[in-house]
Length: 283
Image 1 (cartoon, rainbow, N blue to C red):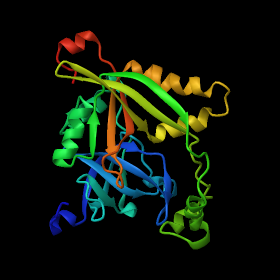
Image 2: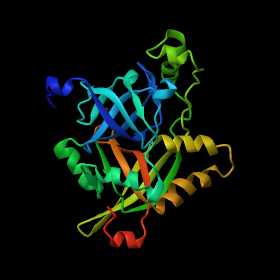
Image 3: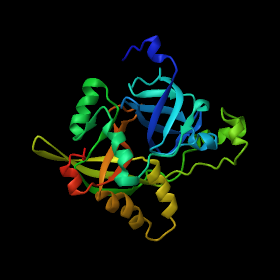
């Protein structure tokens, strides 16, 4: 268990490029929270918690590929090295998300700045065991399949509903924001989504499977779920379209289950033309 110094635990303002927002889940203390993660200016991965995203002020809400600045500090109760607590009221959003112009050049250059990108899941798992890595970019060699299955339960438990409703009955840290909008009960996703993918290392190709919890997946489901062909529409984006992209997974572990990895975000850049590849502009 790491022994962090007072300096490491001290709060400081820090710029973070947002690469991930997970689908919200009930929280006993903060009503509902999303795991937000990204990369700081040095290319180090940063996990930010708690972020009750639907409840924060509109001018502080941010999108994927957008820089924010806020006061954060190393989380005492979460010993994963990338985990930090954020002071939500200090969030400042910087401009628009990075441009998609010129084959997403700005976004591609941002990923180039990452301190570490893994090309094989086994390599990432060894980094977790040896160095405690719990949040990292993984570049799969090929997407094999998108699995869609019914969740164990399509409804929140009584305890989870109580957590979601307590804001209305007891008040919470973001009362001023809650007064400005009606707090709708968070819907639970009735389906689970998993990617089966392969990686190649040292001449060996292996297949892996991990659950997808990206907010975009949940949002797409609710946008298309009333259609009789919703599953085909979902696969068309998260399978067919992404299979033609240069895909990166942002992988993260679960606090209570540190050996369990999730795909917390999918980053999907257009592939570059062959002439650009010959000029060495590819990763």
